[in-house]
Amino acid sequence: MSNVHYLVVKEKNKKTINYFEYEKLAGFNMTSKNKNIKLKDAINVNKMIIINPSFIEKLINKKINLKIKKLIDLIANIYNDGDDEDPAGTLMIALNEVERFKRQMINKYEEYMTKEQIKLLEQKIAILEQQVTMQAYYINERRAELEAEYESHKAR
Image (cartoon, rainbow, N blue to C red; front, side, top):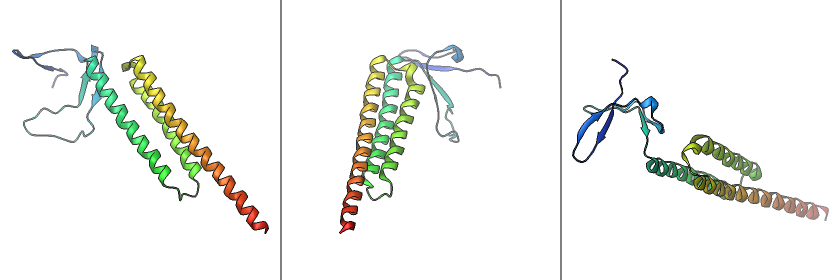
């Protein structure tokens, strides 16, 4: 089969298939997560290029918000698991996850985001980093207080 690609465009009154050279189109590339799905009497799509800027913006915002929600859940689970041997260590792992998330979002979506979106994302990430570091400092101070209290009781 030749290496020909098509773009299906559905308009109100026209039902035509237009040919585009999609390698030359600039847009947001998406691939399917499940590559093994094959349906009868259906078109199998391996890759999509989204060209509409407002749709790209909405799609990226949805992906970023979903990942932020997962990161917040991870941090909340770390806060709730107070019976760890090294809670400050787990908080440092959470801080590393926040930094990793920040780098991923900037590397993946920076060219598609506006300056306002980037600024808002950086503010959200800064708040997460601040909360995690404050909790780590609190746990370290609490541990120092408990050790000092233990030493004072031990001397009696």
